[in-house]
Length: 383
Image (cartoon, rainbow, N blue to C red; front, top):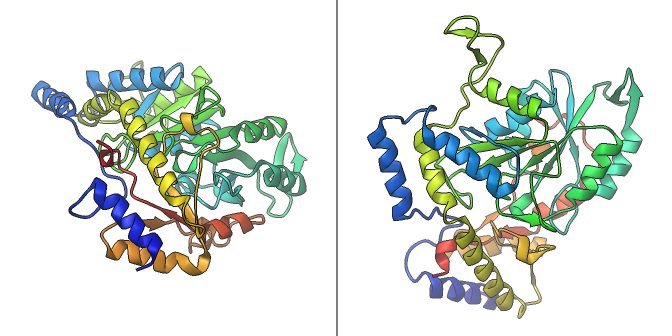
């Protein structure tokens, strides 16, 4: 066992002496349980109930949005976000290849194709310099739309993914989206609690999607949330999420294809409870990050990924870069010693259903996949 692995094992075992040290496990309080039991006792456990509206109001207030719409998961939130900006069959949506598969799958749910672009190496968000150069070289204007001159398909939107809760260069990407008159969707599945110079992630683009999966900083078991600047988009998203049911033409009249995407009240009750401890979880994760950085500064063969604005980051997954030659053995050694660590996702353009999709230069993404490892990051590791 290398000195680095030995030090990391000692570091985490000091915080959790026994058992598998999870990558990121949920922390459920007695207050959370009380709200869930209250929901069960009320009988309102499905998608109609007071906790759904309460969760929406609390998320909107926390983020600083005018409103929010609760969904069954983050993928459905992304799907609705894409539909709200007019993505339809045959379109292309600009997105990073370096992201969890849900981002790309949501594009395909619209019968559209991902159009893969590269990330920058500091925070793994879409690289503004490479994005501007790529769009300038690839897009042509036809019939008041941008068209990919190589595929002939309309390029309809840009998706920006906030990886690990880090702050990337979303402001610069938003400016590029504005210059090209392309809607910007923020995938904030991992960035609840992260701000950039005082503005919460999700408020830079036109629409944003959040996730409350079991491994996120707070959880509702499964769940998502959508916010949008345009009230008309919010109305459309709410309508589509409730099976496109209307009240004016009969009790069971639906005016278009909609989706059963509303968050159940039972999940919302857990989310409301979790929100009460979000700031404390961020505080603990920040302390864990600081402890880890202090330890790793002693080693030249590992580089912690440091946020641009440390005091505004949610520190969802604490991640490091190691040499490509060392990565696989490093993961194996840590796993063998009871620490759950993981590499980055397979780049989406390498997966069989997306390998023929259009892509630009992805050298930064390929380099990141060969180097980045995420370490245990649960807030429970800090007492």
